[in-house]
Image 1 (spheres, rainbow, N blue to C red):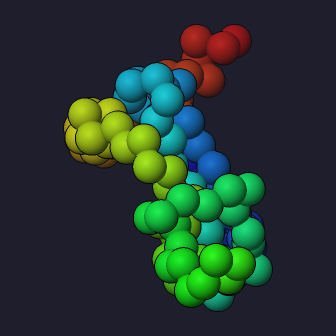
Image 2 (cartoon, helix red, strand yellow):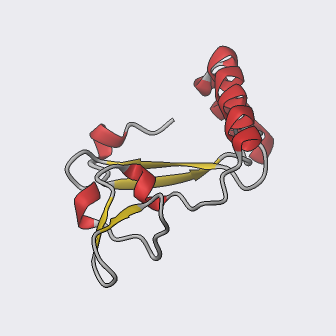
Length: 103
């Protein structure tokens, strides 16, 4: 388990696949409040920005600026279920087991 506030983390990305056992291609992105506006997506689509003119746009003010038009609804639901399962098992129990298996 990682306490992002304790370590002073600005940005943290995590795969949904590895320890959460969620579907491939899913993951999580944490961005500290107040830090998001300092980040620019590598590309934008019609959902990530508002088109102001042929040459101007405004990125969304929230994390959805990083989401692309291909949206995996089933993967998102399955990742949510994997997170619920992990929370029920207990994050410390999962960490302890992972470290034990790695020895």
